[in-house]
Length: 218
Image (cartoon, rainbow, N blue to C red):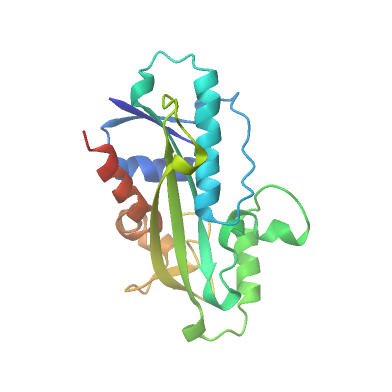
């Protein structure tokens, strides 16, 4: 059985990934590796951040391997994802999780409510036809047992979900910008549609479908 270290401590993201990839994998998260040093996600693209995180964690694991698991079937999966709003020239983009904190110069992620409030404030007065947006996700897969592993060789899988930003939050499910984002073809937000629908059409679902196909190959 292949083992996948999901490089996050976010339980929502972990559950979403496990639900889509299924039970044919053994899953671990960064909660199982408290000694892994943090990775500064300072790239200006989702792919750059995801690849850097997967690569640096894989290199650390290769140097500090103590697991009673087959290293040849062990992978590190990192992702970077966020919201791109056309009326804001693609913002918040790679700063999606810390959008509100940028105003105060603070480091670290902002509460979802603060990020959503800032987005609504910036879009105040923008008409519906100009509130187009998309969620974008890039997954990066690295193999600690690959002795030739280089940053530029980390394999990436991408996915997008087109939609629009509504004028007020709605729904009790999901996380992040889900209460504000209405995917194309629907009249309800991700937070109203729930995980079953989101798991089929989301940006992460699209990227994970490509990853699942890759992992299923001999």
